[in-house]
Length: 95
Image 1 (cartoon, one colour):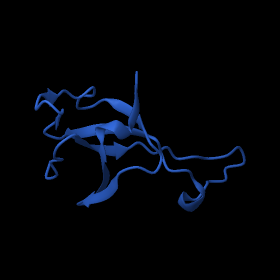
Image 2 (image 1 turned 60 degrees about the vertical axis):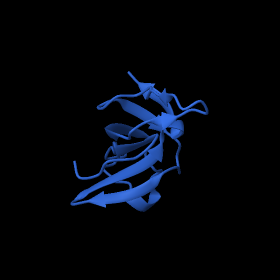
Image 3 (image 1 turned 45 degrees about the vertical axis):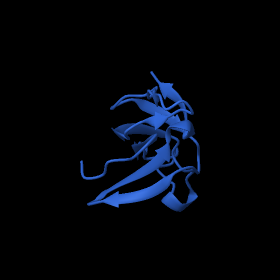
């Protein structure tokens, strides 16, 4: 991986599903909602609290998570698209 997030940030890859309606009609990308389910592909160095203690991440590499819909910064690395966001923008871990 060429991208390494810093601090309490994580790098995620969106999990997009192709959507097809019952008549074989495909929904164009511009009409779809942004995906909220993503996979953790890299973790930052971790945050620090007011007392200088390191804050541990609640997620680990490979976890499937739900994220805030419009949070984070889009990043391209080669042909892949990722998003860097704060750990606080992760809403839940999907089992």
